[in-house]
Figure (cartoon, helix red, strand yellow):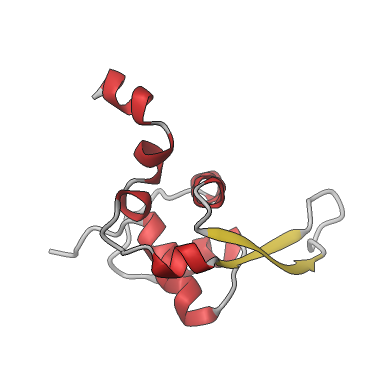
Amino acid sequence: MPRKIFLSLFIRDYLIENGEACPYDILKALREEKSSKRGVSYQNVRNYFYMLRKLGLIEPSGRVEPSSKPFLQPKIYYRLTRKGLNTPEDSLEWTDPHRALYPESWQKWH
């Protein structure tokens, strides 16, 4: 049975290995990963980037590329922050960033 992939840890590992990435790079890598769950959307990946950035675990790297289509926003690349590198992978921030950001909401509904 394939092991469950935590999207936030997948992003962390990908950034450690590759230095920087945009959300679409992560989506492509997830789709190539044999043990990944189908149904991970681009919007879901973007939401994780938002949460990880709010937690201070990732930051824009400064690299921005134009989109392949003129009506889309440019690709913004991200890298791990010092905090992101030093925060243990089993911490709540990496394993459940939504809960780490919104503990009151999590407690109310769980």
